[in-house]
Image (cartoon, rainbow, N blue to C red; front, side, top):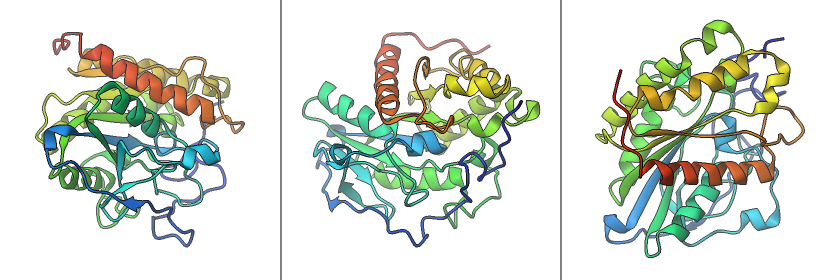
Length: 282
């Protein structure tokens, strides 16, 4: 049985799309000042759907801020804050892979501050991330792509873009047409991101979707096989494996521990890519 996802909604059971202006209050952080030297402020854009936005259950320890990791908040201001760092659906956002990635990168680069730019939105499809998308209801007045470009350009006034982390694919597991040629279409989006940000060689790390989705039908595995092709289609790309990662009980979203392990795998994939020559384009 194929997963039945509809753009922007059914990927999160019982939830309809909600803009950040929903009545649930947004978790705020403390105002923060980036380093004066942009070379000491490394920026990472976080894009995709709910497993990038974070739906892992929160613990009190998860909410503790790391002063080495700054977050661009919903008002486009730098803050220090713990999880959740996304604000796509207030009241639903939880632990994602981005904050763990940021903390590991801060440990890896002493003296450098990490800036995270959260732009993911739960339940979205690859098509909704197209620069040509007319869907502007999620992060109005922009579509998803334009919102991510705008926020990253704001961040780049203070720092240096070092990478883009992408996790999406559940929303393209609902039909053969949506899953087919996912790698080619994602590669086109990667080019668009790099062009829009004037960063032709910025590393782009793609996360696999949960293997636990395979029990629902064949299409999630098709999407992962497509994801695994991306480094052969686009230079300066790598894949973070989701093998053996568990869900939180809803058969869709990663658990708290799995989200943190996925963040570690993004980090490891990023480091490994630094030592591997970029693949030649076909």
